[in-house]
Image (cartoon, rainbow, N blue to C red; front, side, top):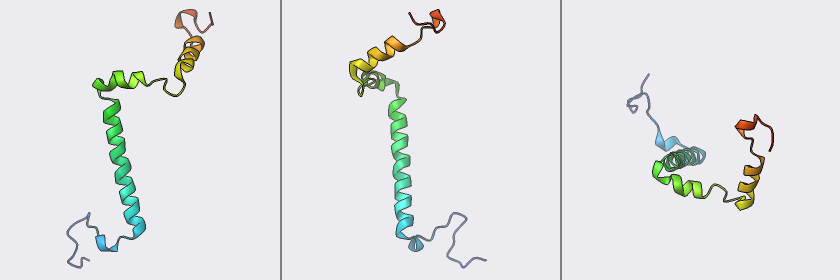
Length: 81
């Protein structure tokens, strides 16, 4: 059942990996690392002010004004002022 080269269940024959295998592994590991870094940056409380200052970076002041004008106020039960 075993040819003697295998050392356990998670044994990988690194020499048998193709170019596509290597590219896929590198991309997967890179994306996982980027996601972990993004998660740590976004949910770190000391970065809250910096992230909030970029909230309307794409829309600019017009986007913020649009959201304020078109948001529903809970005290009016969805009716506009």
